[in-house]
Image (cartoon, one colour):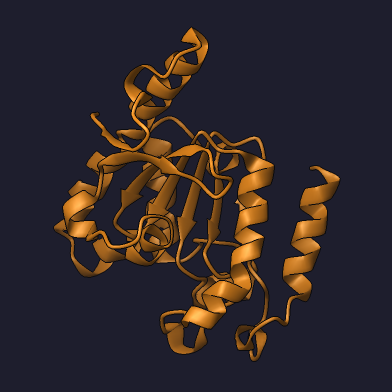
Length: 209
């Protein structure tokens, strides 16, 4: 792994920029390859993640792993992280100042990985990049919009995998939306190979899949 990434991980582990580090067992920087085409971003670590220092390793994480494998990839082929890197007490939602304190770490991750596709998991992650949207209206609809570096980035909002644990009816929806990822990657790669925007020509648009 690159020196800059190792520095990032050590900075996350040592972080005390907000209250979230208090009472936790481990920081959860993220896991996967920094050469990933696909970056998955959730909300925050939970109990299992805090204990292991790894993202998405509980029940929701196991479902996410199965979904990733269903499109011919493994966790080693992608990168998985969260908006915040320490577990909020009692799994509450991260507060605005906590998200802001952690934001520079996520920016650095995106800059290092340079993913072709960012998949947001849940409304909190989605709203950080695409504010004002309702996930029930836009899940599974890829959107090309301005990324953190000012250039255009393709995002795919998905329900959080945990939602399928509480609402089994969302399980098929999540799997169906996940299966759009290979199609999107192909479109992005074909456009790049052709040296033109192709299906991604608009400054901001929803991409049909």
